[in-house]
Amino acid sequence: MYDVLVVGGSYAGIAAALQLARARRKVAVIDAGNRRNRFASAAHGFLSRDGHTPDLIARQARRQLLAYPSVDWIEDTVSRCSGSLDAFEATTTRGEVFRGRRLILATGVNDELPEVPGLAALWGRKVFHCPYCHGYELERGSIGVLAAGEMAFHHAVVVSEWGPTTLFANGVFQPDLEQQGVFGQRGIAIEPARLAGVQDTGAGISVELETGGTVELAGLFVQARTSPACPIAEQLGCNIEESPMGTHVGTNGTQETSVPGVFAAGDTARAAGNLTFAVSDGAMAGAGAHRSLIFPPV
Figure 1 (cartoon, rainbow, N blue to C red):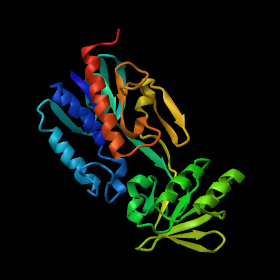
Figure 2 (figure 1 turned 60 degrees about the horizontal axis):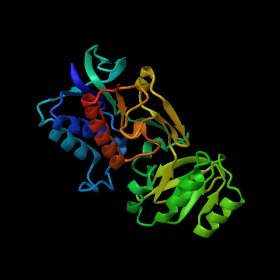
Figure 3 (figure 1 turned 30 degrees about the vertical axis):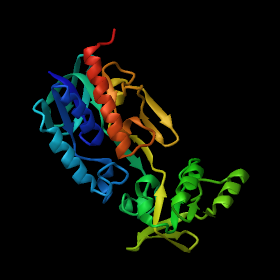
Figure 4 (figure 1 turned 180 degrees about the vertical axis):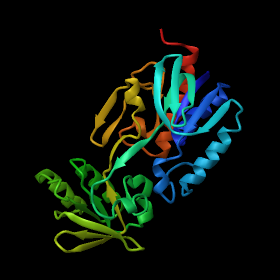
């Protein structure tokens, strides 16, 4: 019996486990090895690690965590979780069953991209979701924003801070008069044609339009729709919340879900996130789970 089972060993999961390990609690981290940012060549905006590769950050964090003797690391995929407070079980695809008094879900999200030929192949390299993570490296070059819904207005206005911006409406977004006025003030161009495909040009990206034209860009931002990467939270009965960006696991201020003893952290518990937020939420989830062991719910 572990004090806490942590499902997911990326940044949020490791940060959660680290708080518990430093409290000398027995922790098992069960990790399938699929970080959300595995496609990116570098991570940015994270203190002391700006520009480092995601893999390097994860490997260093794991090595530091495993220096604590109360932590076990299991490389496997959790297929099912069940149980309740003080008696949770996590079953892996290999058939192993791990038991814990508390459960932390740090399982990440799936990104659903618009169906544009070539887009998925450039995800994390020339096609991005977060300008704070990747906008600076575009060196004020021409930037595109691919609309996927009503959030296109907000996304385009924010992205335009990083360079001359074109919003590709792609047949799914039509700005109203007020929004058009804001675009005009910020110099944001609107391209109404649908996209036929995107290609890597080496220096940037080429957007091919169904009308036959092309637009050369330094990079393209996309509003990927997110959803929890696995159904464990739903299996346990946790509340799943909707946002303009997709769905995520609902939590309170200590990252506890609607199910007592189950905590969630990282992108799976946020409408929108990045590495820094994942680590912060993971640390809170670890501390929250630890405090719940000291002060059990009444």
